[in-house]
Length: 132
Image (tube, rainbow, N blue to C red):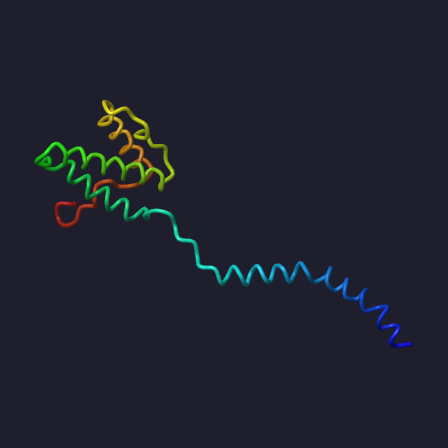
């Protein structure tokens, strides 16, 4: 009789246990698999490295011009690219995006103003007695 009772009750108990504990086991399995996955790497350079690049390029743009027109155009293109990337990372509107070539210098100034309004200092902080 006990064997008959075991055969009759076992499928019911198995189905009940599966329905009761399956979601918890699935969540536990997902958690364990998530711990084993590597952390996602951010796409693109960080805000700090972009600000560093922008300050370096800004100093070159403001300094004595490059000896050739090709270098000057390449320098301004690199500066514009870093401005665009910095606007994307800082999540601010970029006036430079899609500006016609004739208006680039003016729109570049507007983009710099937008970034400074967002709290990004484009000029490096001064050090020493001249800073006071």
